[in-house]
Image 1 (tube, rainbow, N blue to C red):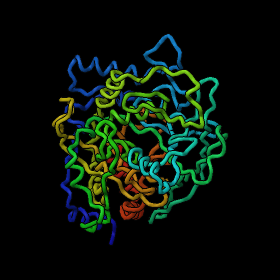
Image 2: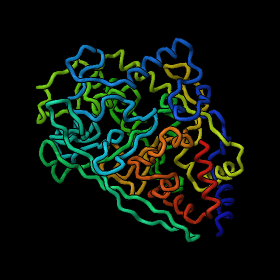
Image 3: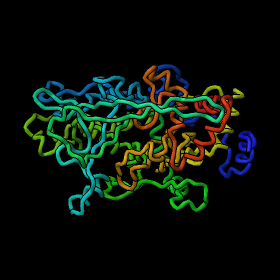
Image 4: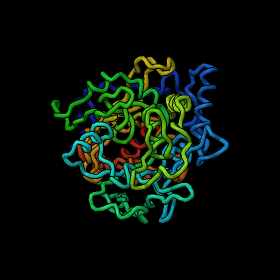
Length: 461
């Protein structure tokens, strides 16, 4: 069947409602800012006093922390092992990170998760219940490639690529890069053959509070782990540990939806990325083998509840930029292709947020294009590292809002997918497999013009 006819047939059969192309994907929170700082604006509906709170959180997000002891006791305690000294160093201009650009380049905006297979022991069962993984006994749950003076970094991230060619039905080709991760100069001995790794770039920060405000019922209603509707899509929520509630809840944040809310996500980043403890994460990622207790700390905890609250408020209220080019015929055609290809089966276009502790985020009609559920993306994208109920082939559907601003914010370093292997949106699409393989194959049969229309739609988001 010719592809254009297939599009018409699939469009007619599509059961999801066709969403309008709203210019304000974040509802009343949407910003009209463009350019390099498009991801760094507060929610447009914040009051003046709440904008001041946003600015306070921004200062702690942006400014560096230092090693203890120091005269600046509000920002000391960095390390002794860490990946960066400031949140902004990973989330560049509040946007996405990128992998090292060349051998020996700093991996500051990409981290490597670590774990080992679980054994049938009580300790390992406790790890799986509360952490979702079993940390490496020496290197912990995250490779920390920097350290304060006197301490030894855990190693250095080294990524190289092999290339492979994908051919479209019309004869044109695209070259894809397959990453291969190595850990050079391990500082505490060889990690061993059981080490499992997962390279992940920092995701964009926009709209996170709105995602937090989506009703749980609106996410769970989209679960279909047994594919009862026979559409080939088997999404399910991750079930993760909430430290504050001391209970298992659904996950929303992180590449595998391993965190339940932004406060815990931020506490985990302080602990893992910067070696800073908080009331919610009272231990950093140092293990007993690394003897971190011999180095000075910044107090117990190093990140006060007030600072954690301020950073959480900031991360909740980074606004989504307004969409552009909605009336362009290519964008309109690309939207219909997006729906007909089946992309909306995971990238759910729209929700109305429920009640949130921040009134600015409550009751907003938003268009994030995600279901926040886990999906099997195939062997090519697999990290083979389970996390809570996520398998080694599953990833959370990433939101698509803001894609059209990525190049402006990140510049030439803009990269896509969890490990930044894709240099373009088309490359990212072509890496889709597993539950998305059928949609990817339809893209392979599309004409060059239809592919351009699809990308035009994605860049309008």
